[in-house]
Amino acid sequence: MVLKVLFDIFNGLLRYYTRKGTDFLTVTAKQIAAVECAMNASPR
Image 1 (cartoon, rainbow, N blue to C red):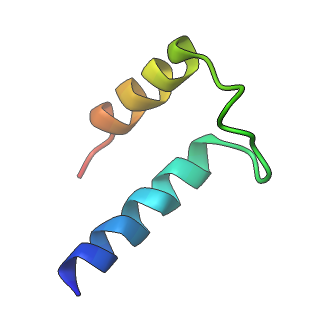
Image 2 (spheres, helix red, strand yellow):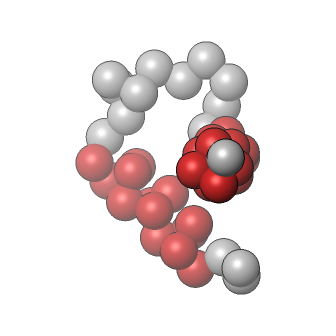
C-alpha cells in the first residue's frame, strides 16, 4: 500500500515536468538530469 502511494506521488511529479504523451525513449540524459535536479530541489 505504501509503495503504491509513493509511486503515485512520483508519477504525479514526473507528469508535472513532462508533457502528456512524452516518448521517454527520445528524452536525453540532460533533460532527465534537469528534471531530477528540479524534483530534488523542490520542498517536501
